[in-house]
Image 1 (cartoon, rainbow, N blue to C red):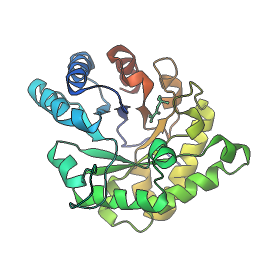
Image 2 (cartoon, rainbow, N blue to C red; image 1 turned 90 degrees about the horizontal axis):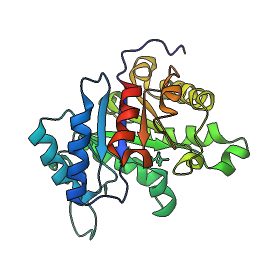
Image 3 (cartoon, rainbow, N blue to C red; image 1 turned 135 degrees about the horizontal axis):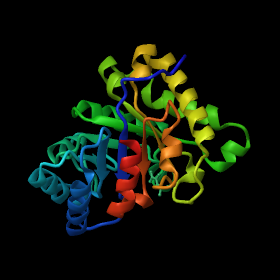
Image 4 (cartoon, rainbow, N blue to C red; image 1 turned 180 degrees about the vertical axis):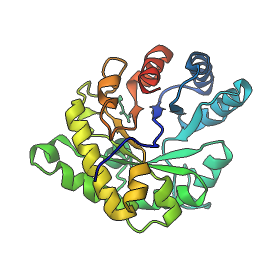
Length: 258
Ligand code: PEP
């Protein structure tokens, strides 16, 4: 499949992980919003749960184009699930997107492909966009299994979703060995995997949907390497961890995208 000049808008997401209180998140939303200017790319931030409401208020107050992303979700709609947060709650808090299957959730909290799939479905059911995170470990890459692992995760998360879901799903390719390590995939490695992911997604969702799907790269992206990574024709944006915690470094990535 030729991934040609697309109708795809770039998307840059700052994943704040377990950093920033509500007050700190408000400050960072304000600084990012002030520096955004007229960008062609969509820009979003993913605060921790308690910071979602303050961040949403600041976005609203400033009439900022920033979008709000949740880092995780529990797939049940409500009930006796102490510590959990439902998709409906996240939608009500102002989130438009939710991460599903971030490698830290898979590795530290034990989310397997089945759990990730349930999260994807719950997010769609609440009218938001799931960001399906996939990526191989270093051992899997060294064993020559990177494409098959990523393909399996993609299929588990997306195969057989309702058409509307397949049409809105965002995919984030995040090689585990590049997350938080300072070791970024080369632009060639990223583009090659993104091309393969788009091809696999075409098998699941059809060429048309695959050609429109946003496929983001994540893994030690920063202001110095973002432009080269984004030059790949199948790289439609970046999911940024560490470099999203300061307005200036995050904005330099947004500018590279926009
Ligand atoms: C992430 O958390 O999704 C991520 C890519 O982190 P970092 O940019 O710090 O590698």
